[in-house]
Image (cartoon, rainbow, N blue to C red; front, side, top):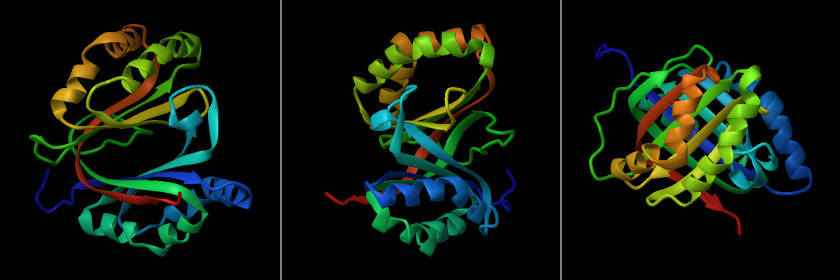
Length: 228
């Protein structure tokens, strides 16, 4: 990558809305807020996503949880978004929220035709973040979802995983998993064993995906709040 090209800096925002009218406001933001993002300074890529029940990776949706994934051209644009009124206006409607600022050190595949450029050095003795997402072929949905529960159960019990959440652009067919790990070793121990490894091998050998992306990130910063 040219030294004159700003790195791809990702911002992930995980939100849980309060009940009542706050939910309606949140779904309005989910449906129409993406249009406000289209002309955001320095924004290269953005997805507004729903979540599974209680943040899980499954077919049962959550009506109160959402995720926002954005990629910006450089640190300055990402930091400006995190400090923006657009996010501040959302906070009063939230029961809890968490944001992560990320820079990729390994990336493979595409998301809606978009590649994430890896620019960070590999982390040493620090938390790392994993993002996997896929567009599932309609003909393979039943086979794919049969493998999901064992992989999710293994992730919930994995040593060194401090956060995992299932996200989706669309029900059933376009899914993503975001997880935060204490170290690269902990992440690799899960990825290369048990139900997850078997699911990935089967998905690729049987061509479950029409498009997929796997990204490993350095965790540059995080924050948020819980309203009790």
